[in-house]
Image (cartoon, rainbow, N blue to C red; front, side):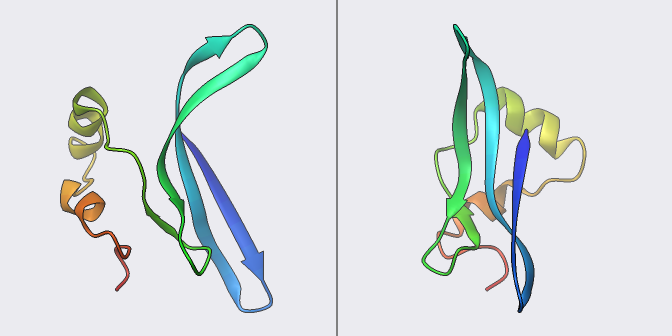
Amino acid sequence: LVVYISKSSEGRWVSSVRQVVGADGSTVVTNELFRPGHDGRAVPGVPVPHDLAAVLSSHGWDSMMHERREGWWQ
């Protein structure tokens, strides 16, 4: 996973989370699991693949976070 952090004078926040799925020549292929929302903070993007969800869940990730379209901090 690649986690993008954005910052401003107001603080820092996660703006995107990408899953690296492979490469096409010199281009890295990713899925954007969480994308920037209207305020720049990450909101759910594409569905989390079942195999990745199982690994994340074994480390404490709550899959319901991805169901909240407005973001998990609301």
